[in-house]
Image (cartoon, rainbow, N blue to C red; front, side, top):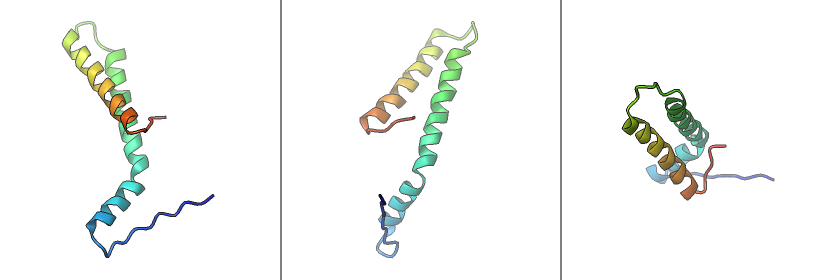
Length: 77
């Protein structure tokens, strides 16, 4: 099976932006995965003196990232 995406760069900048989105999709996914892992590490290896609110903020950010990804039918896997 083949899938061909076609963009008209002469038409307007919208197509160029959509092209960049399509080409950089993997980079976005890897970046979000890296951010999720960074937050996970902050939680997993939290120092004993980390304020509870800080830990909760990391946890909330991680949950929000995953919620947004799910709502857009995406995955970090």
